[in-house]
Length: 195
Image (cartoon, helix red, strand yellow):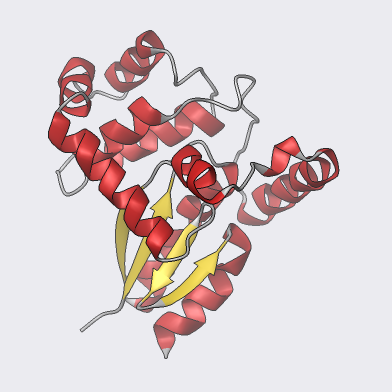
C-alpha cells in the first residue's frame, strides 16, 4: 500500500505554489499518493496569532530572495502578484468543491497560474470567471458550487482540523503523523515516504 502525502495549501501562498509544482513528480518517483487538502491560510493565521512573512520587513525581503532561488532551482516561473495579499476565500472554496472530481487538477492549475504565473486579482469574481472560462472550465458552475453551504463548511472543517494538527502556515505536508512545513522541506517529505 502506497503512502499518502497530504498537501495542505492555499493558492495565496507563493511557497505553497512552489511546493505544488514539485509534488506530482515526487509522488511519481516514490509511488506516493498526493492528497490535496485546501485550507484558508488567513483563518489559520487568525486562529493562532501568526502573521504573513511579508508583514515583517526583514523577513519579507529575505523571503522574496528565497522565492527567486527556489523558482530558479525548480525551473518554475514565479511572478509576484501585484494584488498580494489576495483574499482567497472564493478560489479556495472553488478548489474545495473540485476535490475528487475529474476537473480537480485543471481547477487547481488554473487558479495557481492566475495567482503566480500570470497574476490577476483572484478576489474579483469577474477575474475568477475569466480565468476559469479561459481554462475551458464552466466558471459559473464552479462559482455556484463554491457558494454552497456544504462547500463552505468543508473548507472550514479542513482549516479547523489543520489547526488542531499544529499547522501554522502553508504549505504543510503530512506523511502519516509526521508534519513538514515549507517548500524547502520536500527532501524530508521524500525521505519519509521512502521509509
